[in-house]
Length: 153
Image 1: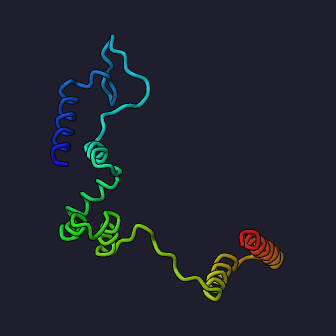
Image 2: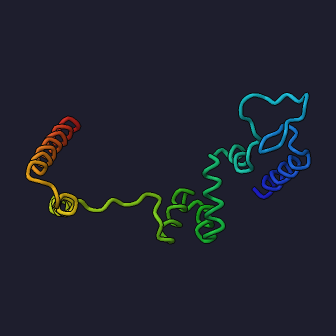
Image 3: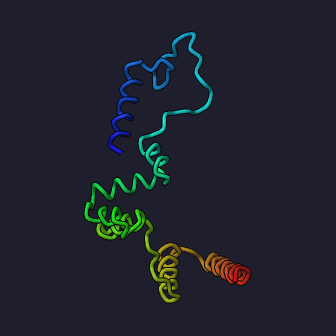
């Protein structure tokens, strides 16, 4: 990986020295130079290494992150005790961050309490007719949710 990172740095330097002949980012295009249509770029160092090793570039990025932030966990990856994904998960657990936020436990009482609080807060100035309409809509919504759950089940 360090070799590919060095080559990547050379490619970036070369692009800067050539003055951006193809234009872009505020630079004028050089007359007579035809710019290829479409998006093309040199592969990143991680992409080159990933192709050589037979894994995805994101696995290379993950491995590098684990290597820099938790060398002892990276040694477990090298020894085959853990996969890169497991090592990244371990790193997330150690830092207290999770890639997916956990959903809070749901129960009917809490949901009703939250609904009551919202109604009290938002509808304290509603008249009787408006409250009846809101109740009817909530009832229709509840029936819809029940029917949709029956279809899914």
